[in-house]
Amino acid sequence: MQWKLPLLVGLIVLGTRICSCKFVDIDKNLKDFASAVEYAVFQFNEDQEDEFAYKFLQVHRSQRKRLTFIYLMDLEMGRTVCKKHDEDIDNCPLQEGTEEKMV
Image (cartoon, rainbow, N blue to C red; front, side, top):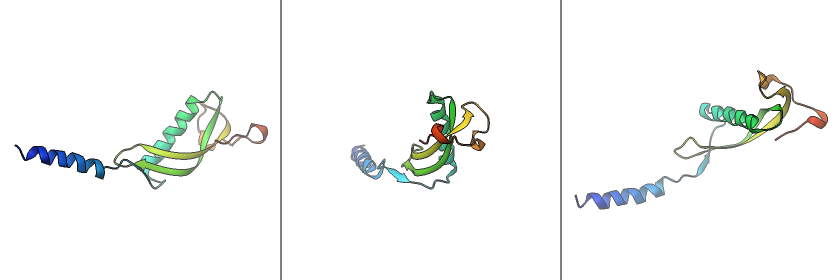
């Protein structure tokens, strides 16, 4: 029993050094990342007071926290002519002129 406590403490100390929870670059084409992007765009549209929907244009940064499914992403999105709750926003044209807006 006495040897188990130092072993446990050693594993905890070693584990915290090995388990560095930093963000690392990942492939933008991973299925789980694509789902996270889709969810982020949906939540962005839901949270905006703007009546027009924004659609995803491209990924500038894709990272994941090690050993988790927490993603860090920089996305480019454009304001469309479609309303938030219209169907098929992906095929909606972007607004042009004074109404054009990129985020």
